[in-house]
Length: 307
Image 1 (cartoon, rainbow, N blue to C red):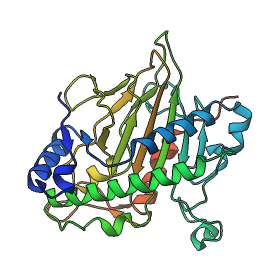
Image 2: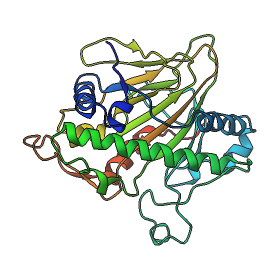
Image 3: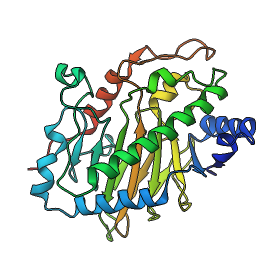
Image 4: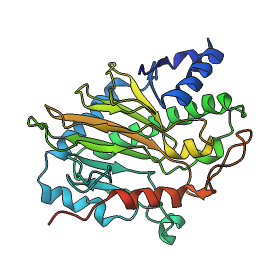
């Protein structure tokens, strides 16, 4: 399976928006994965994200536990190695650790006070620059994700700004990940799964391990293209498109050397209703709020903390 490589400048500059949309639509329908070059996000900023993430993951476990995701009902903070099992069928726990950042809201926001789903405050480690770097990257990735949805809307026969109301204050999650070296090749870096939201923007450090499994095909390595984003369709967008788009299973094999990645999971606003889009035919799925759908998927992912 070839994963298409698309130059975002074809759309963003207005030079070839029609051709870009056609190529994007084909990728979304056939592979569910594509690579974006020319995205415009600063490589210096990406390097800064890796740097502050490395400093965090190097901290003692007891220090990282002070900002553990298990203490936060809003999917923010540190997920320790072994706390997730993405492949429910295998029962293998993922050999990775992660740190999640969500939409940054103040503690006195009425939605935070009311305890609305996924409307909480971020937690931050005591690392100089960590918060500022993460929030700068979050803002740039969100801008790119919103812009990609304009092209998606056009491909689906909708107005370019159709999705705008669904991503005003989304349940987007910036997740930095660290996979320890596994020279014995045992276990799994991240178990086979599909993503939960609309789209995912993934930047990797070039260490191999990511594989996708197309419908009816075998596991295939995802090639690394320097400074490019790997983009994949999530389950929410597959439901929204009434299965016109495909959300493709993928996994991370245990890497031979330490591996790092930066994932940006773009889920819609909590109150957005995921139901068949206009023009996609009779609905194959019951309508569900984005918040309820995300919670159901997260609850199936996390395992009890190791004793």
